[in-house]
Image 1: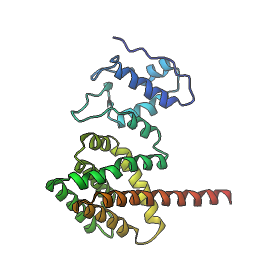
Image 2 (image 1 turned 180 degrees about the vertical axis):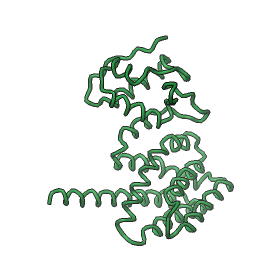
Image 3 (image 1 turned 90 degrees about the horizontal axis):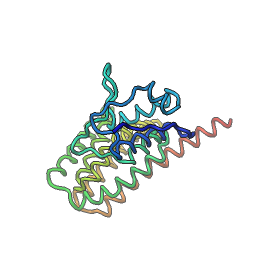
Image 4 (image 1 turned 135 degrees about the vertical axis):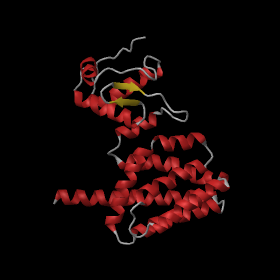
Length: 246
């Protein structure tokens, strides 16, 4: 079956291209292993700029939906056994510059993950969380591996929830979450001294609540951790706004 692309007539061009390719995959018009049209061919078929096509293809590549083989072409990627083609991924990719939206998604996923981990975490996964926390402490004060360890902690916590779908959702959006960790951590560290240790202590306390099987405290600590990031982000944005007005 030949995939039927339609001209894009909308202000949100990249999103429309993403949605159209996603729809073709769901309907079976595009299947894993199929070769996609070239960037130029897509631009002509969709009647949009090549820049818009390039942005959409980059997002799909980042999401693990497409595989760009240099010198060969663009292919629909054959998903790994634990891959999830999830609309949330597309939303996050399109909203990558809107940290507030991504932080809200993180709260929805990670507060519940912390509570479930406290209830269900196995001794092996608990030991993994402990190892990450210990590495975080060893990494102080330089913080050379801070972003990497931060992401490892949150992904390990999702796995500890023993909910395979929640864990896969976290892994599906880990590239975007990694970007927000990098930006928000930079904002925090530039704002006040002692922030690196405070961030470590927040992660340590979440681990201790999970280890104590206290799901209410684990949820509350995770919520407070992410809420503080939101507050700091808002403070920095307001400061920038005032500077621009002056």
